[in-house]
Amino acid sequence: DTGVSQDPRHKITKRGQNVTFRCDPISEHNRLYWYRQTLGQGPEFLTYFQNEAQLEKSRLLSDRFSAERPKGSFSTLEIQRTEQGDSAMYLCASSLTGGRDEQYFGPGTRLTVT
Amino acid sequence: DQQVKQNSPSLSVQEGRISILNCDYTNSMFDYFLWYKKYPAEGPTFLISISSIKDKNEDGRFTVFLNKSAKHLSLHIVPSQPGDSAVYFCAASPDSNYQLIWGAGTKLIIKP
Image 1 (tube, one colour):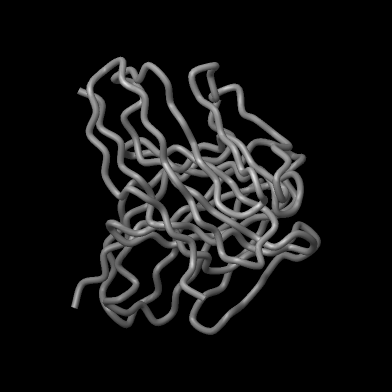
Image 2 (cartoon, each protein chain N blue to C red):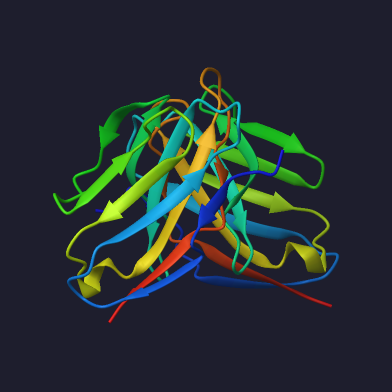
């Protein structure tokens, strides 16, 4: 078990471009979460999936953001028409359903929008 | 509105002494609390949790205390070790394994 992985680790893009991030959760985990973290703040919840179903979306997730988990395994987070305010660390986490299982985090993707 | 607050951005403690990190919350619906540790360039790592039906949970050098009436929890690390130097986040949830609400973190520095 290699843990949660995220790709890429760093992304620099120009304002207005689209970007896509990938997250591979721990294989037996049913739940997958996306968070955004800005400097000096804790992670902010964006959305989560149980298997392939997206069950909750934060109001932080504007129409420019879309997340998918097509086969209930890996997930992608796409940001369209990036803005400078999108610059942040995007964290993915996974967990087992049921009980009080903690979330296991990946290393994050740092996005810089210039 | 910050529902989970960690009012100390940083804390410096001598190696071997006790480290106490504090966290306050405002939402009385929170019933599950977690502490995570984060090293630079890594994602947060789960440390310890506590349910609102308890007031203390201990795991090795780490103990979390919950005071529901004061809406306050604290993490005690005894004895503190150099490897404990990291940013510590408090998180709370109104439901298990779901949307976590996070504090801003406290940077703990253990001095040799």
